[in-house]
Length: 368
Ligand SMILES: Cc1cc2nc3c(=O)[nH]c(=O)nc-3n(C[C@H](O)[C@H](O)[C@H](O)COP(=O)(O)OP(=O)(O)OC[C@H]3O[C@@H](n4cnc5c(N)ncnc54)[C@H](O)[C@@H]3O)c2cc1C
Ligand code: SF4
Ligand code: SF4
Image (cartoon, rainbow, N blue to C red):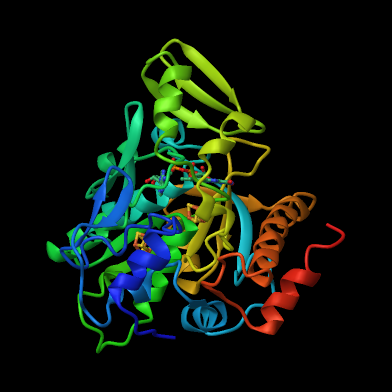
């Protein structure tokens, strides 16, 4: 799976082509890659003949079958959701978290549990800022985890803070990330021991993936400032066909059509809306804001969810049968579009699927 290519190719193929997902994992791997606001760029030419930055990037060649084998020890049978053990509804049983959380607060509950119980020394999160792009954040206690609750709809390169934490000597880290971020971490975990540079992803002991169908450009925040007349934004949500910004003076609604200009083009090429390689993936339910959709994927994910439920911090219930086709339909729709682009050679070359996987998408999702 490992590829040897020059860092200058990362610059050319991914960053300059606009395909960077802003996962942030290459940031800090060498002194030459930095973030400015949410942009990721080389600040100096690099003449190395190979580099981990290229290998771990979610927009360089990624072999889906190899990753399934690496993470789950098996290929998938479900081409919509990938490998998983269970799909459930879940929500926090802690009032403070349900108040602060985006929906059921499942992500904050799991991250807070890992940090409070000492199973992780910190959690790699994204902290919302008043009216501007969020900041990557290393939360070392429950209060800090809660301060990061809520969704920020731009592509924060939050994995940059993972590298910082590891260089500071942190050992075990829970990481919350968008699907492209989880993909980057798994690619890094798959590198040979012999690979140079610090394989930060090996220090991640629990990966919580978020559902994500697209993220917005940073310029979205300036647009929102105008819409909200500079009011302090307390919460953002995208319930149906509009965005709701909650300010101290009330809610401001923005039709989804007005957001389209800010959707990042690389997100239209994204093949993984449900964080298929995470230990657990969490999304909305699309019909009940007090609950989350929780996909338990790995045995580690199952163990941790069991412990959190036993501790009385989280409750789950079966996923309503009639709603699963709706989730699958949205996922297949996105994947089919991406596969079509791949076939037409429209710059989707990062995606390396075998014929079974491609067929699974082509034939899946019909009749849902
Ligand atoms: C860009 C984006 C797009 C999304 N699109 C969808 C979608 O189409 N469908 C869907 O069902 N769900 C989507 N989600 C997930 C959803 O918004 C919730 O994050 C998820 O349901 C978890 O809810 P919760 O109540 O458990 O969250 P909380 O307990 O409030 O925790 C939210 C966590 O998200 C992290 N976070 C916030 N913003 C970002 C960011 N930009 N990048 C990385 N991490 C972040 C925070 O660190 C926090 O830990 C999206 C999330 C993001 C960030
Ligand atoms: S590793 Fe992540 S941040 Fe770096 S170029 Fe690739 S997508 Fe962008
Ligand atoms: S749509 Fe894909 S590429 Fe875009 S932020 Fe979400 S996971 Fe990353």
